[in-house]
Image 1: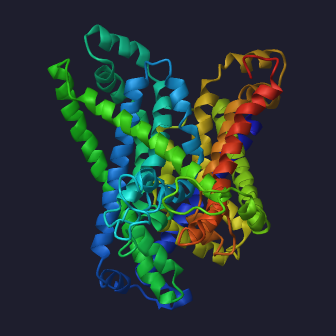
Image 2 (image 1 turned 45 degrees about the vertical axis):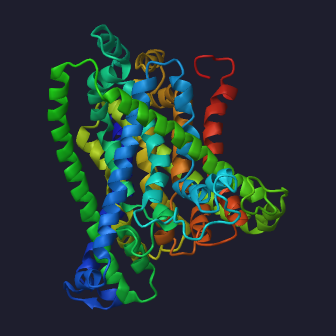
Length: 564
């Protein structure tokens, strides 16, 4: 037994090494060029020249402001919409059904949502087609209307909302299982509070304690996303993360130094935003305690929650429209403004693109299967080690797990690429799979951890009492009973892998093409029909993985109602 425990502990250490090494090495590899040191391209000594080169051109402060403005606003609105939605429908019997509707948006990668949204809100998009020419008088797209890449980044905020609000709804739903929210709701009703007010006063403080790290991850991503910014953000000047990405993509190697400085500045920006958010939490605790002590039954939180839930419903409709619009485009032969739908549909675009798309789909699927499979295996190894040793990870370990999600990708992926170059792995399929694993592993572990820990330990004890070895308990008792959570964790991993843009670009050195990298490239002005093909395929792969994860247990355990 001690030997087996040692082996599982080794698996846990390997897991930490797999996803911490790229982050730590990447941060060092980005920090050194930010101060002028990278001998491979002529940086022989430390200096502040990269920082001077960064701040010298005009527009850097605007890039910083734009990053903060879009990131913080998207996070605040996502949290408000998710909390307002859950507050209003938590006690409703329709809660599970409505919450299940967010699954398609969760499975759809950010790039697919951003591309679809760009079509819906564009001057030639569906929204204007609905009212043109009847209400607008326009029979051709207006040339002076800016709805995508607007200077304030509102389109980017909307694109982030469509993905982050469903994610936070899922996180709140998971956290509700850990608190007596039904009983607290009844207590609030007995004291004369309306449903939403009781939920915010009694339930939300307990839920937010478990929601803090997901909120921080949303804030870090929203502040530093590149792929969404490439499609929806203004380009001159762009958000800070895009500014750094442009420098790393420049053919002039000397541009790498100010790009590294911009990446470090992006990391400091996220760190500062997280610190300010934490201070805001303390202030909100003080204000919230005073609000609760006043005990007023009629309060403004109810209409605010209603408005947030209404915005969430509109966002869900808009999210479905983004995917539907690209699906229509992929089958359209000719679709002129202001027609609401194309006059004719055919499979011509799919037929023409199938030879090229086949290889891209194959690469995308293989990366998703490999990274998700390894991530689930490592998560199972960690959780099995935890079970056999009888130790639950501390809160610090959870912070460690969230580290790749809290550190901006642009802040360490260049340094990780330098590491891959030294090991002669850059541009390889293996390097891209490793880069994907860094981001897939936290999501796979977090998806599987709660169901694993919630499994009644008496099943394992009964099996052991009947003579089953620890290995037999794992393979014949624990894993069969947890098949659905394991498959769902695998599906989550596939969805995360399919949506990776920067890790594919840096680790693949531009030589590994996936649906996401191709979709971002096409979004700069390619045929909308071709873009629709790539976008739909990009959304379809995670959705198929989710569908398989839900259906397979029903097929395998059709005669075992509790396990199906």
